[in-house]
Length: 477
Image 1 (cartoon, rainbow, N blue to C red):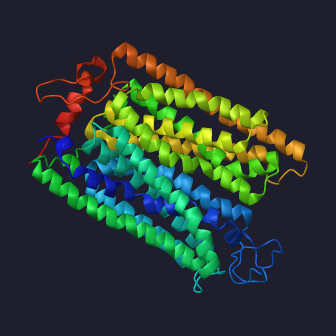
Image 2: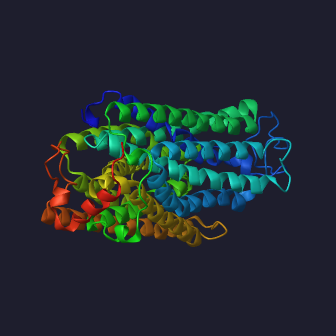
């Protein structure tokens, strides 16, 4: 029986989806508690306290805007620079061990963040370093969890990559949305420490899901008599192997990097941009900005189903990127309703990322998926960090007091994001031409092959190296 015929793989997918749920819940906890974390004890503008008189003497931590943003910076850069060695480690240790390690690291990181605001460390010299350490651990864990998830679906769902990846994205986006619904309310009712310990609890759910995955994966592999080194450990990936990754992989990896770098920095700054351009309140602007994640919960799963049924991943990724271009132009230069533009941006984002990430598993050897995803995630995180840094320089260290000058700076910032979307679109066109010329797999549907049947990847001269690499990851009973 083939692994795609094992009915319990859908329960395994449910566990896989929950592995990174806690990470994504915790990623934006500082955003949900920005007032409490950033404001000072004597800040007259602080209104986030649970006390009736609005005083922040109990709840506010007084980090200030600079150190508050450093919490996000350390997460992004740690994620970028750690994800590649984690990808190599994943290929050596296997999915099960890496899943346990990554979720445990996420739980540890979130617990340290919660511990930093307890009476033992609150307002001491150790509080901020503990927060930075915790965000670094969470960034490393987040990268590991995502790589495990990608590699699991590459093995168990080669016929339904779109469905599986769409389900993962939908669940982790539920983590983002749930954070914004719960965290501020918990902090208001029970205090900031309880809100942060709730994040640690959510990461604990990821640990339990990782254990569930390990059990199901072991049972499934034993039942199918296919207990490969893929699930235990693999021979080390050599640099020469990476150099032989096909052109289609590198195009997909750079497309991921450029598209995320036009979307994520916008979401990070979107609330303030909407306030400045449309004169909405902070609460309304945040709600509109968060609509990108609300819509992605639905669109990601439906897009995955459609891609599994009809194929066309390279085409849909290019289309999603191309349609994002007029959205960014409209945000910068036209007075269209921001909610409509935000929903459109979230929709096109969902289509693009659900199309792109599963492409990696279709163009590299199965045992190299962890390393390949690690390279793509490294490029993604590096470019996002550089783009955010550029936007910060454009907007200035001090907010421009004149609204017209501020809006002109926003136009320049959005032009940077527009250039990323345009590069992604051009690379998408190149990818489709390459797929057409070489009869590649990215625009087709998954087809089961008999053991004696060669796939188009092996038939392609470009992919001859697959045979040599696959032989290096020999199946052991």
